[in-house]
Length: 457
Ligand SMILES: NC(=O)c1ccc[n+]([C@@H]2O[C@H](COP(=O)([O-])OP(=O)(O)OC[C@H]3O[C@@H](n4cnc5c(N)ncnc54)[C@H](O)[C@@H]3O)[C@@H](O)[C@H]2O)c1
Image (tube, rainbow, N blue to C red):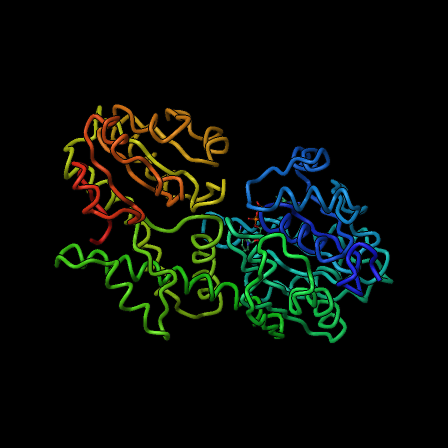
């Protein structure tokens, strides 16, 4: 029995390769449920920070969790894969799978890790794909293990365990998942993962997020590897489709004088549809939906299946920035020489992640129109400052809107909901708000003398 976590009677040693948004949360949460976890990453700076006790990303609850697990000896970090893999029973691959130019997922980091695991392992291991990968990657991994593994390591098993956490609530999502999907071909692999996830299923861990945890059941779905791989891409593509669908409806609402918020509410009350992901706005971004959608189309092509429905989803999403710009131009005319505030840089609230964020495309387009851009984000500015040069980053939203001709809300941070709008109005040269996330009530803003333009309302 593990003395520090008596609720997990069968702790195990695991290795997590790639400690980014998914890997670090996975490592911290498995340590929190009583296992001994070693996190491996080839980013020296990231590992050095983690070894000094600094969490390099912003994710609610994560830094306290990492600090506690490190202190209690269940979690440590290294750059050396051999050190991580040597004593583990299972290695979780959580490296990035970014898009190649043609939209396919770049599997070079996955391949590198698999080859190195095969090379350093001196006994059988379970290799778990947690990165989002195209269907049949598990088969390919098995072949690589056979090819590169040492003679006596024929006992490698492969599993697919796609991750569904959302940045911004990653710890909560990991510990309280809607479902756990495990794709395996061998019973011993299924059993190992079932035991590892047992504390989440029976909710026997001390929850760092809630005083009273949600009383939902956590279904464990066991499938073959290919089905598990498909579940991830199919789910993300479906969510993206829901967003683009409501954005199309938003366009129609604008033409006919309807309100997309009401339409979404009415649709969402139908349990077959549901209200989630029916939020019209400036479009989706991040490291999942855009790239997974593209990769899924390519997977379809590769297997002779026409998934071009998803190309439309992508196209509709791509138009959102144009629509926001047109709204600005309809009120301000040419944007040349105008000053625009961009409120929110992260692709969604409660994260510092700006990968494929709509803010980046919007800022690029504003600069091309020769506007001056001022920006503020509660968490994402350090990351944005590394890649955006011609932007005036401000310390708070009031400084960002000062002297501007319009403000565009790109991320629905709670902080923006609590803005003193009269102060915002006083700061602006021209009080115009383009509400890219439909956060505000038009009547409230208009009663204050602020011109308001939402999306689909
Ligand atoms: N971010 C999300 O919300 C999310 C959710 C579900 C699934 N996913 C999937 O999980 C995977 C990881 O996503 P992420 O957002 O955590 O990415 P990330 O970029 O934050 O993390 C990836 C980490 O892997 C490391 N890495 C890359 N190549 C390596 C190698 N060869 N050896 C060791 N380490 C290496 C990087 O240094 C980085 O720290 C992707 O496939 C993504 O699609 C992401």
